[in-house]
Length: 426
Image 1 (cartoon, helix red, strand yellow):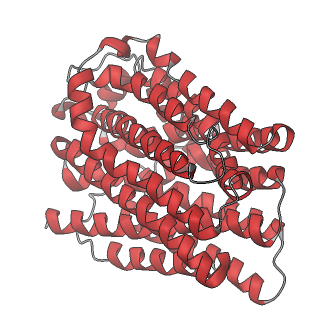
Image 2 (tube, one colour):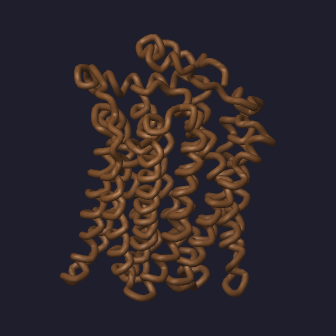
């Protein structure tokens, strides 16, 4: 039963992430190719996609902890499909405008926030804590497959049926994900008392757990800084490919598809790198590598050397995957089940909450200095995000701590002990 349910989650995640990847490329291309949006407008579009993290990031975790996480994922995907459908409808009505793209990006951010919080919180229940590393690796593999297939498919759809046509393809894939999630038969046990406490208290509990932990704090600081500059980088990435390198929609899709293959590469080398460096050192080495490899993109010139940009993106994403698998597995293994949603949402608020500002930063830098320089500045900033981990005990810890299995049931005692940052060894 568990294996069949995990396979359903795996397939659903591929469909959902692929649909999201198609929309992630399709919406900016609608702005750049069809509405002739400026660099600042594209930056604001990217910012709108991340605003939900600031507004709903913290309460989302408490809400998810009160509900069926599987049901939250299904409803989130249904919401995303409905939102994406607004763009083709506006195009058919000859009423498409940049403000509509802002609205769609904002609402997609809301549905994506709830899906991802529920997604990460549901996995420990489905596979058990002993299988978290394997489960996270496989699900990161699913996302990597989506990162390879999604942009390539989006590029071809853009070539064949315009950027609006690509969004219709995104809608179909998200609906497929909903249908597959509906096949999961494993049900979560009821969480007693979840509705008897105030939302503010539950949010505060998640914040205290993360901010009171000596090892989670530097991870949050590193990831938050990383995402600030990575969001600035991504805001100008498609603009640079389209205008700086003069690539067509199909060629942009191919470049992003090659870059997405870095996710698969990262999964293949993940265990080897962590085994060689240790878990703690991996958490500062990989952000440095992401920034260095990302520098290859703005150093590329129009012409045959465009593949240097694709290679840089591949290596950057491979390094990012190694970082993500390591730190997400650590966070899940350290957190009591009743706090998983709040921990995940708190971390997302802290580390993804910087992304709207990063997207705005990328748009401002692109408008002021040009997309190429904006990418250069952003890539350097990504490398410097490793500083909080370098200044923490994590930099030398080959094995990171994990919550003992028996502590997962001792909820109140665990919450008290986790706040002071002294977990048992892993």
